[in-house]
Amino acid sequence: TRILGIEGTAWAASAAVYDTAAGIDAVFIETDAYEPESGGIHPREAAEHMHDAIPRVVERVLEHARETFDGPDSEPPVDAVAFSRGPGLGPCLRIVATAARALSQALAVPLVGVNHMVAHLEIGRHTAAFGSPICLNASGANAHLLAYRNGRYRVLGETMDTGVGNAIDKFTRHVGWSHPGGPKVEAAADDGEYIDLPYVVKGMDFSFSGIMSAAKQRYDDEIPVEDVCFSLQETIFAMLTEVAERALSVTGRDELVLGGGVGQNARLRAMLASMCAQRGADFHAPEPRFLRDNAGMIAVLGAEMYAAGDTLAIEHSRVDPNFRPDQVPVTWREGDDR
Ligand code: ATP
Image (tube, rainbow, N blue to C red; front, side, top):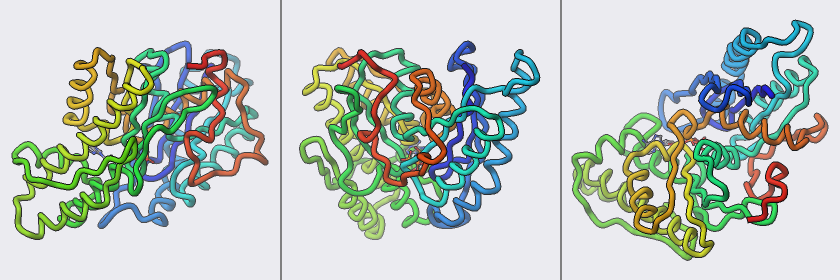
């Protein structure tokens, strides 16, 4: 099976082709990133970027699909078109969905509507070949702990306010660093020392707004920025690690996968790996190209959904900016109720 995936929930205008026979390592991905000139992501500018860049990245992956297709010229080079239906920025989602519908009609292949957060999770489960892991999704606009049970990915814990990456980006905006802030905080943290910041975990939920205000305040009070960056990482990632450990403990699962752009951070990975090692659990973080937003993960989950017959009629293909992972019936894991 060959699937064309399209992603465009926020900053990444991305397209990919996944051939199930060639395997995940051979997924071909083209991404054109939106880089705001100042400040964070402006929804209107991001949508303009999608409008410009989606046709380009789709054309490039279709070219690749045609070159690597050994079927007759009369057949389409892919079996289905999968796209991110949400969650994400409405104006961006609508452009991506319009492109996906048009392609599915032009190629005369089915349309598959993918939940972006479930795709972040499934790419880790696939690349690890894990059975039923706990998943920590640490992305820009979200932060969730998820576990599969009876046909859905259940949300065990989540942020009570902003997503984890967005929280870090708000701090770096205050400092005057360009978007995205995560990699800059990671680099600055190398030379930092620990200062106290608020640590907010309630049960399996967590909050980042207090820590962000405190971090901005410490910076304004002339605490060295390296110390604030170091302490931000230590505090936020310890909160995520605590909740991930609690999720493993209460469910009795022994596998953890990481998803989302913040998962590219080496300190977060090290903390999670060390927590898992201490309790005898397996830990897996996919390679960076599958962690940050990318159409590869959309194509890979799209292939599973397509194989399960989980396709979408055009009239039911509306996007959903608030699409939660637990709203998705997990059709591709039938018979597996752990
Ligand atoms: P979502 O998937 O929730 O829609 P998103 O679209 O913003 O989120 P992602 O690509 O998953 O996108 O994540 C982007 C975020 O990852 C940004 O907030 C960025 O600062 C953060 N990030 C990237 N690299 C690092 C890093 N090395 N350390 C920490 N954060 C990072």
